[in-house]
Length: 265
Image (cartoon, rainbow, N blue to C red):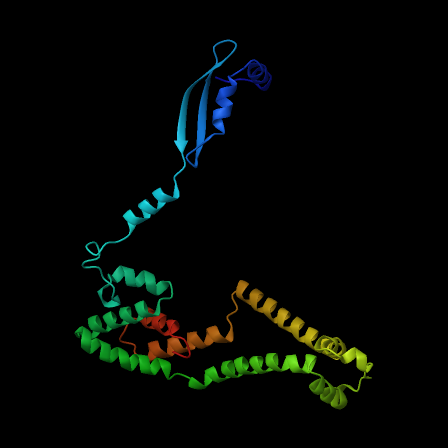
């Protein structure tokens, strides 16, 4: 039944339920929150409330009991598969597409079995040759990354003595900056030394930080429009090389496996 806003206001203004109902609505029983749901029944004026029901929130103890019922038992785990070699083929495909390297390896082994008509143990031997070829592709490509990691760590570590250590700060100032020294009382603590050296460190470090932020922004926009990075191109080239090296096997499976293998694996 449709009730307009004015009529609803008039109807509600005539309702005079007992105060005990509202007092019980905020009552707690044995530490459990009680929510009272009232269904008003309007019979002229005043209205009476009926069909009051209680719903108790679940206690921590009941939650623990529910969790205990959901936990696996030794009996339920009998016959459970934990090895990739025992997974269903469809499961391996899904895991491989999600970037699971072990699933990609197992798919390739099975592809070798079907193509060469080999048993599992023999197919694993063939897979070892494919794995060796994949890992041996352009090994020198990883060295620029290692150099970048090492260089960034060294520069980050050296920034502390060049900013806060007075002997290092004096040595650098005399050779590259030639800034006037403050009063001796202004260099008593390492924080005061940092305040002095920050006069020449701030432009340098600020510029480097801005360049890195700009480079990160450029990379994000490159990804948005589909421009692949040098690392992505390396994995593409390696996977294509492996597929050409072993053309008898499924190119999609072998390329997916190659992409799942990291440079340092």
